[in-house]
Image: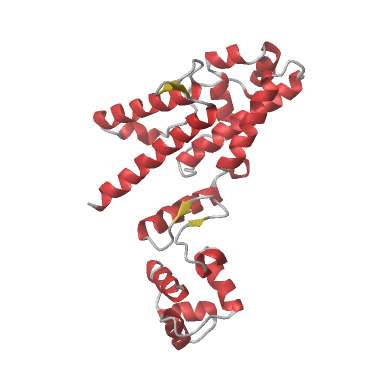
Amino acid sequence: MLGDKIKNLRKINKLTQQQLADTLEISRSAVGMVEKNLQGIGTEALIKLSEFFNVSYDFLLNNSEIEICPICRFEYCPLEKEDFEEHKIRHNNFLNFPDKDLFLSYSNREDLKEKSHKILKGANSTISEKADAAMKLYQCWFSRSIDSQNFDINHVPFNEYVAMILNWERSKEDLPEPVYNLLVKEYGIKEGLQENETYYHIDEYKLLSKPEKDIQKSLNQIVNILQNSKNELIFGGKPLDDLTRELLVQNLENSIRIANKTASKK
């Protein structure tokens, strides 16, 4: 119920009833009554509550405990302290990330990737159109990379990321020579990504122990196979389409995140 959510949000934010009352410009006793579900809350106070805790009206008023931040697009439960803290870090990182305006949500990435691939493969597409399509595709990959790193400020900016993509041998093979030369002239080439590796790994990876590095490397190899293999991949005798590959990658990453959270609570 609304009162229970308000109480939990207040406690997670380490606020007293009086502090919340001052924020909402209502009395402390009114906050107490609302938290006990003995009294409703006015529209003006609800708006302030939503803005203060950075949650939507739907989350406050409906039964769902899952929220998707409209700013950083993070799906989390604001009532779980660990989720709350993770979102707080991610949200602040997003606000301070230099290339945040280039970020694309998962659904937008999928649509744009499909359109970009069609243009790149199109026989009638011009050099300019193919160069633009390649950049849109790189933007999708960049979005996925910064998403996986929670918009860490140490992630390379988009221009450098593109230069790393252009350093691949695959880029020379996949792009028409005039398109490749045009992009290299604009962005240059730079080391930093392994061949076919679309996720940029921040230097903290170097601090991991050897077993952890080995696990990370193996996972990266699996992701690369799913994302970038030019050969048809088969599971259970059936070929995997592009959507299935992408969903497998997402599920793999989510499973690792959930496993880490579960392990940290033990």
